Length: 453
Image (tube, rainbow, N blue to C red; front, top):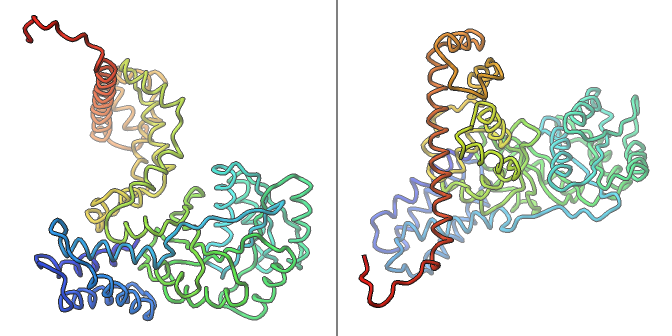
């Protein structure tokens, strides 16, 4: 995501490297390169021009402090303007109805039905709501079945009427069903088309008028660039939606839609899809996205994802096992599952400052843990809890049972031993630091006549 744009912007800032101050000449040269980078990223031409004009005006009005280099100041100004371009503030949903109603709109192939399932899972797991999905796409034969399968997958019920042809009637009935079953939020999945047509627009307008939604979310494929922005404008002119969901941000997107859509339609991006898993939906934070575009990483989002998978009771149990040197392959396997739940591995790595650039041309397979899991699952319960018993014959059996080789098994066991030692060391050092902090200030002072040792 945004790799090419990040690289181009970094090259643009190098023009100012070594310069003593910002002048109209060197800032013009830098911003000319920035504008080209934005256009190459498929950003709307007017948006790119207005952006660079604003940055130039702010840059020329700044006094460069002795401690701040012109290049650093320009990065700061561009960062702030990028965040402003994408909306500035994080925009949340306003769900006030009983039930609150979310209407999903968009073209076929944008990921609208899948995003309905992801949104339902997020509301259920993170906001502790009781959502209901409504299958109101009566145009595409497989749409209802797809939503039903997604509903089962995320543990959310789906209201559907087999053979129905009137989506407005289905939507009205879904509201009554939601009220009867005490659902506090209803997500209405609607029909899409391969292109905008009058029938599609009229149908979704009729559904909107019938259900009076709290939120109308336009789902758009981030990989379609300027086409996404044009489609967003057409839908907004007819629906006046409340927010945008960008899907497939984990793909080979150049970033044009994310950077242009807010300015063109004046509606906030509320969520982004970051992978195929049902957990892969994030609130959109303009400032954090600007950090990532400029290669600064996104530690805050990384920590938030880790906290979502964090179990305090499990962490205490694990700490006790580490202190007693009882950390085993069951615990190791459990930790791998938590990491996998956090999302796409390359996306996670890109959130660490500096790592995204280093991994630009490296392909990190999401199945990177597959062989490790196969080896662990080939172990007997005794072997998982007592790794010390893994002699040569047992290791050869594990290699055969997991479809790997003896070298991979030996490598895993060596890495496991190193991990266990490191975790114990870190835990013990932390414990010693806590004891030192508790003892600080409690030691009796030496009598005046006693020599200090």
